[in-house]
Length: 148
Length: 60
Image (cartoon, rainbow over all chains, first blue to last red; front, top):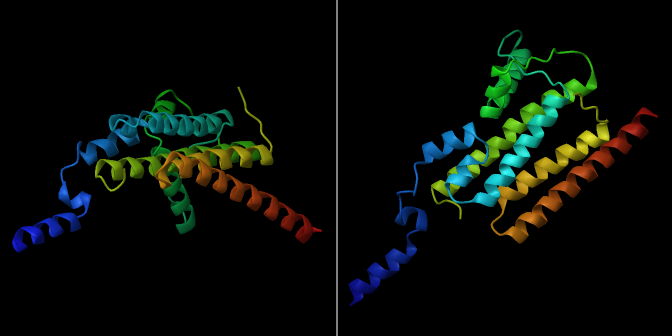
């Protein structure tokens, strides 16, 4: 009787994430899909509303960056600060997934000119990727049951 | 097609998309998300106006 009560207490003490270690879908698949198509990770996890908002937000940010003729960062070096900025910006651009790949594939190549609008556009393109990173982390946490 | 926005419009747009995403990923209920998104947007705007006025007075 006492042993059974102890087992019940222990079962209640185990967090939900440890009690069911197997997520419904592979978190790696979720990460890959969430990166490739913004919002797809949430859609796959049956969070349609959140997926649609993620897609809309990342798409809006990316398209505004394109319409401002923001140049993409290129992964090339120089001094330490330039290398950090260029590679960091390139990773940020890349995190937009298929939006970045499509833009490059379709030949988007805005020149890096000294004007404030393209400069802001460049930052919007990176911001789209960074917003997608937030969405990827959120989808991962849902897939691994760390979050509802 | 070329989109030309001024600094304020761009900061407004950036604050909006960032607030939507921050509200979406940080809280648990829809009500909390909306409130946190609105709070983030208000903070962005307060920083925009605060720094704007600070630059105005510092530059003279």
